[in-house]
Length: 234
Image 1: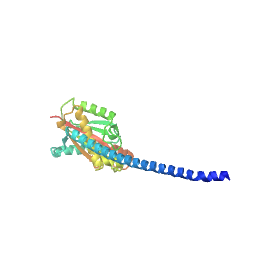
Image 2 (image 1 turned 30 degrees about the vertical axis):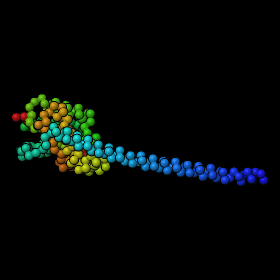
Image 3 (image 1 turned 120 degrees about the vertical axis):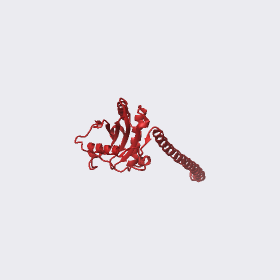
Image 4 (image 1 turned 90 degrees about the vertical axis):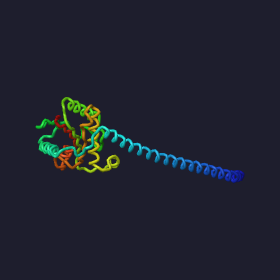
């Protein structure tokens, strides 16, 4: 009987302690929720700031490169354009795939370099890797050996659309945007390697000037390229 009375007296105390414990846990839970909301908001702010910084870096990089690269304009004659079209047809008629970097000495004394995109860039990127920078520095050194005229850097892609969100964020205008930016980066490296900026012009063609039909992985790889056309000096 005494045990039952003791139990009866302790029960309210236990219930009270449990209630207090429950209240403390709820307070802690509310504090944790508030802290989580704070960090979630901060994370959102940081991600937004990072996106703005990335966009600003892209803009500044483009302006920096364009500061040393002449924009493509109407200064190229129809004869010059027809010669380039002739060289494109010559490249399209190649039976064997060229190497990573191919050099062609043309009949009028000009030179054409064709650089496969895999030598220079990762997929969906316009940043030239270390190996690609070395190869472009070698090309720049060759260009500077003798007199030359206008240098035209032309970027090309295959016809696979740009679909990855991260890539679209950088190149919202798709392959045309990517090809132009790649040509711009190549031109900027040539200039940093000593080629006169006043002689360099840039153009991006995206998928619109394929050398072969984009109907196989091998042909698509062949079409993804940067061409550096060096006209003969006067």
